Image 1 (cartoon, rainbow, N blue to C red):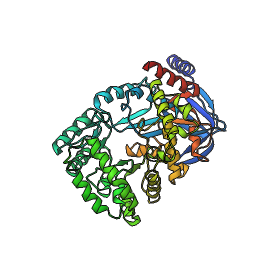
Image 2 (image 1 turned 180 degrees about the horizontal axis):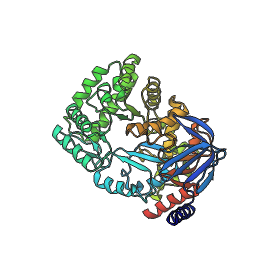
Image 3 (image 1 turned 60 degrees about the vertical axis):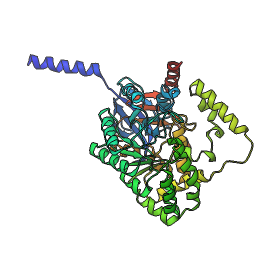
Length: 473
């Protein structure tokens, strides 16, 4: 009996010393793309897990309480298309800038392994305050490589043969990649082998539509397609004729570089294909893509409709960039703003918005990505711009939220762990000052971020960015 009393006393002491744990965000409006909108809620997370969601009038035990009155809690956002090592000037600052804008997960769609592996190890360290990161390793290109380190940064590798492709993907799997990224100059035989080995190894497949193939053939066997690129070919009334011309050009008798070859074909055929749009043919193509996520990167494709430097908040957003980049981008923007002459052709920009809306209306899944930092893409900030463009294309605000939360989780089969605000899911959250369902632009009103269970308020987010800048100086 005496031993039992001592044991009970010990348990009471331990319980009293430990006390409540976790953080409770109280009296908040909760929004996600599956459960919709829930008013007057208290959300509790402990470590990296959401542990409770209750009505605000229910008393909860937590070590910390955050008043969410008048605020809106959404799942952490994804940028589904980034390049962390594309520009070395960004690499150190990019993670904190993503968090500053509410992006708690990113998918890196192309970088060489000698740069990616140490960076991934650093970002995945238990003590790192950084978004979750999923990566493909290099762009898997063909006999010619677009991003070869000459005309463009080196983020691609050659796969001229089936044997070379199989060996490369097997090697990348052993090095820890999360998916593969197939690029534009692979031939059909190599493409098929890449798909086969990725399926054998259980790797999701991201891809551009190879220039040698049709979207309706390549698209259905991969899990996501970037930029809507080359889909315009399958939407043209004279599609077979354009494809034959393309195949002849791809023989590359002029021995152009990979970048020159790809650009020449885009310049030669993109607008003629759009001008020859055939609705019935295009709808048949889009019907083949109903299980393939489209990542249109409209903020890039449609930039001529709203260049970022014409936005009212452009100057403030530039202040977050490394000094060297900020100066370069400021000078470039001023040059464009002062340039005289005809207005730019917006045909392709309008096409991107139209095709995204058409695809969405026909049930094709859409994901939100930016291609950061390519094309004046400020990390994080540009994801908000992409979401605005998706609404412009015809998605509702809640559908756009799905594109930036659940859709990426589905690509990695992580929808049971991420993408919504539910008990048992990862504690990646964004607290907003305004309702994004009323206006998707309110996605910019980030008040605080929860990343892997860490609550960081606005001041803390600013401090993270400042500290990251200090590391680069």
